[in-house]
Length: 154
Image 1 (tube, rainbow, N blue to C red):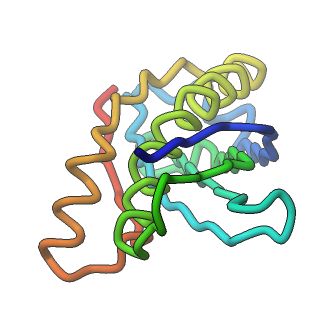
Image 2: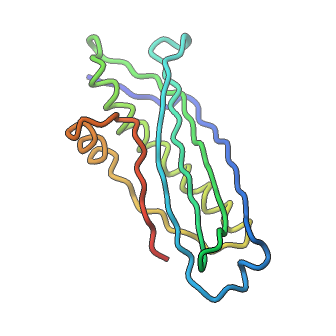
């Protein structure tokens, strides 16, 4: 049996509004793009500990003008244990699916707060099926940590 425990989470973010205040007077819809990536590294302590970073980059344009660039790195320290030795494939799936499912809601909340604080409309980020994302990447022979881009409609 595989046990995944989030022991600590933290966040870093960057929000860069562009073409302000002119962008607020442009009569056009925002076009947004979301890119989601992740990486991880094993930790010495705790045993079976892994630092997992979920990076969400959101950018927007309006009538061809760049409106903002936003980056949120939601990180967590996870303890991943099992009754028997964990294969590399099982470990990568646990991180790419279960760990990211736990981190994404925090990242989504931070993105919403940053947009509101900057005076921009809220972007409702879609729920990401990390299991499907992992399966499609491994079937295609791609790196499980490869970026996924999502075009969001206004």
